[in-house]
Amino acid sequence: MQTTEKAYHEFLESRYLPGRELYLRYVVYPKYLALLLKDDLKITNTSKFAVICDLGCGTGSFLAYCKKRGIRALGIDSNQHLIERCISRGLKALHDDITKFESVDSPIDFALCDNVLEHLNEEQLISFFKNLGGKMSPCGILLVVVPGRSGFMRDPTHRTFITTDNISNYCEGFTVTDKLYHPVNAKAVGGFFYLNMTILKLRRH
Image (cartoon, rainbow, N blue to C red):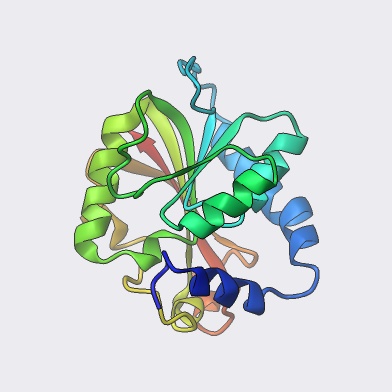
């Protein structure tokens, strides 16, 4: 199964737990926004592209959250079926390969990549950071969310286990400024609790 297939969309939805949307809306997404926007960064983006770009936007949950709060957001995903789902919900989304960003023609100030990078191989990861770096504003912010060891092992489409230690092998042009774990801020928890995530904040330099 590939992440670009309709079957992957169905696979994801079959695994969602009851109360997932409420958990995202009241616990997870407020944390993401706080981390993304807490810095006093001058917004230079004046084109059709949004202040926050959701890379690998999936079904558009984060986009919908931003829209309800009046925050401009644009999703990009390589799965055409997921993009169609977003558009049907009235969300802004583009079909594109996030290792290439061929549809992006202006600077991105803030970007979120939530449970996406683990689906890429090492060559794709290097391409992702290289091409994203060329599209981001100076000092732009990227928030990366990846699963811990237990979560990584649960999805057959995962290819690369990303940690706070090895991400520097791929992210040339970016500096990690913050790192934490969620919902329990302890690295070891990710080894046995599959929902514990690693969150990395990176700045373009």
